Each structure stands twice: as C-alpha cells, then as structure tokens.
Length: 171
Image (cartoon, rainbow, N blue to C red; front, side, top):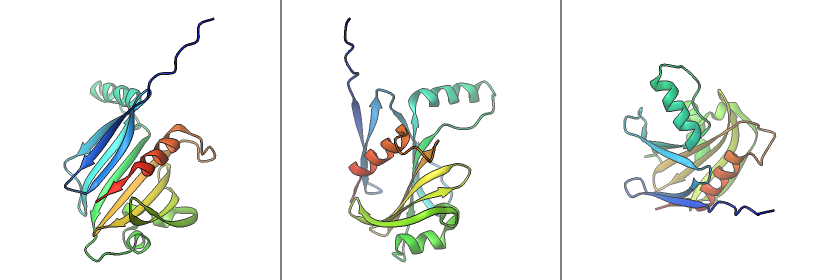
C-alpha cells in the first residue's frame, strides 16, 4: 500500500503598519481567506476576518445566486482607538456591544498577548465566541473566533485561533 504524503502546510504573514499588527495564518491545506473591511462603523477603525477558504467560496457563490444563508465560521479582528488607555476589562465593560462582555461565560483570564495586556473569555452572542481583548499603544484589539462546538477545544477553528494569537505581534 502506498503512503500518501501529508499536504505541505503553507502559512501567510499579515502585517499592517498603519495599525501596528502582524500575525500568521494557514493558507494550505484547508486554510483561510483574509478579508479586510474598508467601511467600518465607528468607533471601529479597522476590521478583518479570516474565513475557511472552501466554505467562503461556497458562501460567495450562494450570495451571488441570491440564496440567503448564514455566513461561515470565522476568526475576526477589530481595532478601536483607546484614547483613555482603558484596561481591556474597563474597555470591555464600557463597550459591551463590541466586546460582548455582558454575555461572558465562565471565568475571565488576564494575560499578556503580543506585548499588550489582555483578557480572554468565552461570550455567547448569536454563536459562542472565544474573545480576546488586548490594550496596546492606545488601541484595543478585539479578536473573536467562532466556536461551533464549545465543548470541543480541539475544534480546528479554535486551534487556528490559538496559533494566530501565538504569532501575534503588536508594534
């Protein structure tokens, strides 16, 4: 019997000088498509999402055909100005619409991510999300990863969110 070689993992590096952020994400196999959003609602200053490439292509085809459907599971990043240099928890309490802080499930953990003070928690909006709120250089970085099955920490999107956070650089 022939052994199939495991597909070569291809990573991409995203870097945005204007907003002081960089991270890596998987492109192949079963990777992600990165989408930047130009028109964002204030107080958001920048936003992007990472969608499963195959599911995102199917979603776009369905939308083009006029078929309404839910979006795809994704990892989201939004950046907000933080002129008062609020801590991640104070910012989250002040802006619950963007942090979903008022829907937090379970404990809130404090840590340092990418060189910035951060809090993490699970939140229950339309879907359950892993939320990470980071304060760095008078900006708040909100990273959310959709969770299909909250009881399964080995779900691929959760693993991919953790890998993105491990590679996150703020400058």
